[in-house]
Image (cartoon, rainbow, N blue to C red):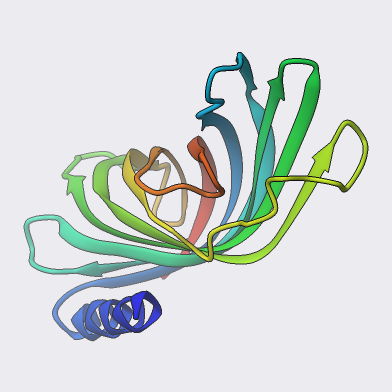
Length: 193
């Protein structure tokens, strides 16, 4: 049911392409993730980890005031590393990520443009892996097939084609049993004319 709702949202978003200026591009991303683990009564030492991703992005203009719908499709890896007492756990997830956000571009007299965006994301699980102290024997092997983060970020363009963006993803749902994964993402993109 969640997948059907996601498909309907994407069809709705893509239908806005006829309303205004549409821009499409490719991007590369670097993710810095930190898990939020409910360890019960034991101590949990949560660690930051780096991973990457790549995909396409789209902005569909809603009006002439700079307001757009921002979406895309990216294949992204995320990791959750933590210690449960003396046990090291590494969870790896491969997601097909689809951001569904509103974007506002601030007008500028120069070639550099600055924008803000916020909304929700949909991460669909493609693959997951678990490693405990160097073994594949793991209690955390139930990666959730659908994860939803809250997304807030900004971007800027150097000229009409090249830009960078950064955003924070706050986990609204668990990626695995008792594990939420928050991420800070930095990406570079090339926008086609």
